[in-house]
Amino acid sequence: MLDRSLIGHEFPNFSVDIEKGRLKFFAKAIGETDPIYTDEASALEAGHKSIPAPPTFLSAVDMEGPDPVPVITLLNLDIGRVLHGAQAFEYFEPVYAGDTLTVGSRVKNIFDKKGGALEFVEIENSYTNQSDTLVARAICTLIYTHPRSES
Amino acid sequence: MADIRVGTEIPPLQLPPITRSTLALYAGASGDHNPIHIDSDFAKGAGMPDVFAHGMLSMGYLGRLLTQWKPQARIRKFSARFTAITHLQDVVTCMGSVVELIQINDERCARVEIRAVKADGTATLVGEALVAI
Image 1 (cartoon, one colour):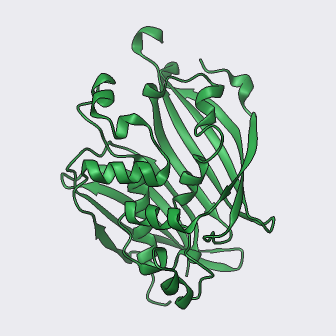
Image 2: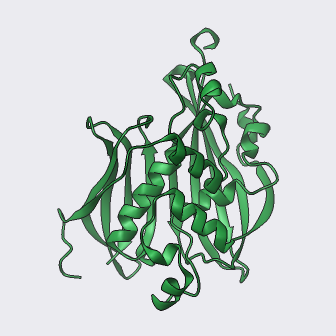
């Protein structure tokens, strides 16, 4: 069983510069065809202040901290048994190239199902920009599978 | 936008087959370097037939489904559960429809159910979004 006393644990904040080149690369990787995501002139023409970060780019921002997946270290998880179960975003303001986001992250909950064979870890992240505006929140749900012999 | 009502379908988005290149590019661009998605030896050692797609890659496709339908700034919430693995050569199609029109904080919103589906009909992601209309 994962240590339930770590519910509420807060990871250290970290800041990430949202780089134009990285956004273009990410857009290419998801096959984006709308030019506002890859061409700054098109973004400006469409009324944006620069290239916008696509809706799921925040998950890439998560990986830019000192430890890309700190919950694995905190809970001493075997990465081969970790599944991404669910992901949720709530958006308040757009994120653009040139912004700097500060990421706050905490363990929201740990619970189990199927008699402990599956444990769920919810990580809640908040994203604040350089103007101290909360731009988004996210919840990442990880599933930790236990081999039958252990349960 | 009087054209949006319960039952309105979002124009579907069909993706090209998932290749090793797709996964290598996504690993680099997303910063998710988990070897299970890019290193066949590691994936086989972990009991998988081969590397398989990042769940967040398909959620990125679902994001494209939404932003090609409505401007991104109108998306208030966006969530998905990962329900099946996407393997190499799978062809994923993203689709969705409006299931409810609701008023939230003085704003009229459409709640849409969205999913990513493989050619054999298996849903790999099942989610929903709240979009201001």
